Length: 64
Image (tube, rainbow, N blue to C red; front, side, top):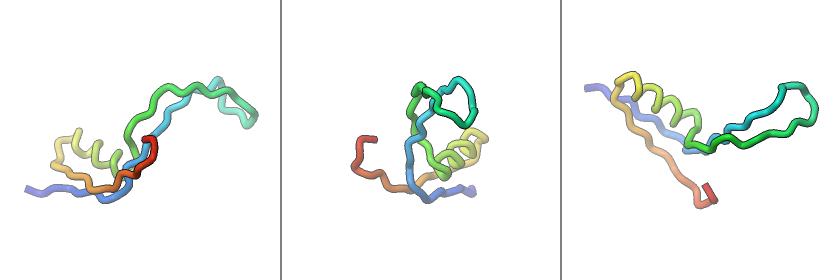
């Protein structure tokens, strides 16, 4: 059986809600913080499609 292995950093994605996307000052409301990063997101998507996956990465010692 073939498996996809992703190597990369595990980041935190902060999701914000804004009133509009104009290039002026906007107030932004934090909606959610969740695990992310390009490699982790790709591996997650492939796993949801039924593909055997693994993730190898480094987690830092910061608040996340």
